[in-house]
Figure 1: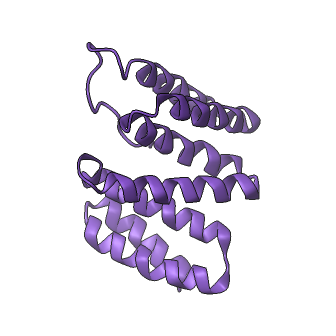
Figure 2 (figure 1 turned 45 degrees about the horizontal axis):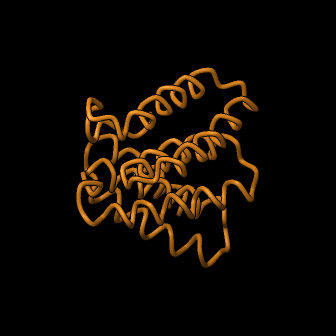
Figure 3 (figure 1 turned 90 degrees about the vertical axis):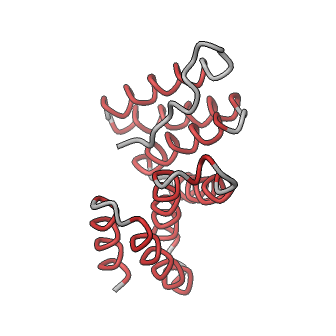
Length: 153
């Protein structure tokens, strides 16, 4: 049931029905927590952070919840040694850290995402990390576009 809810939530998110997608992920989270399914918990936390980021919570006090979900998902994925998750989650986490003024932490996360993508041989992921690294480096640059970060695809 939780897997099907996740698939439906992904479809709803793609269609822009963010509130419905978020509600389904919230239902899934309690199931995954009861089962102790850490991989699912990480995926759900990442998905909810993406939804909140996409709907604009990053511009409000919702950035803290996005950060908390991403940090937890990233740590779980690191413990489980899932390079695909480390790369994807790391990209968004680095953006959130940079937006919060934590450029050094963002660059450290990007190092881990880059290592994960190297391990996978994911050329597209490596290019995205390199682009993000350049954007993070320009965060304190007055000519850099403010808020120019978008979640990885």
